[in-house]
Image 1 (tube, rainbow, N blue to C red):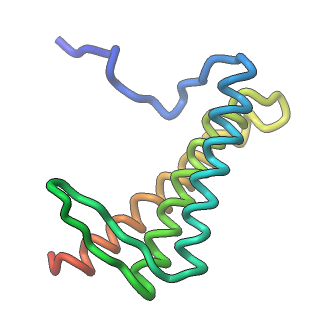
Image 2: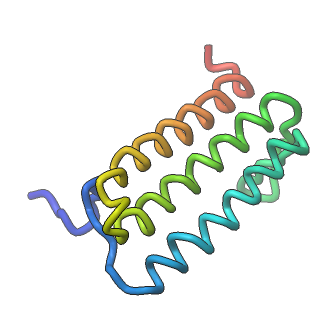
Image 3: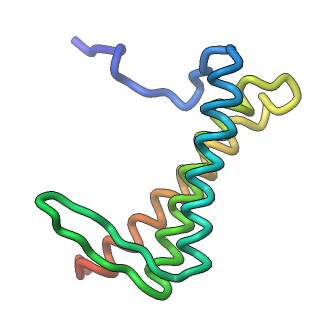
Length: 118
């Protein structure tokens, strides 16, 4: 009926090995956060689509897109690092929710503003 194998739950905990904690919890989110922060500082971003299509973003659109990327980095960090830490595990769900809200609201803002959905 419902295949739970492909579902995602915010309460899920990642594997407790060093690769998932430090690689996927610090290094990868750090790279993602560096890209997002550079979009906020430079106030310029480019969204790439299918068949070579691209859409440049500048000004507040690029800043909000950068904040959305920072939200994705926070989500990954909270999921892979905080969930595997004894001291921070109780805050992992809060970090995931804040990251999701920042990411989805930022992407929603960019989509609505640039595609004239309203």
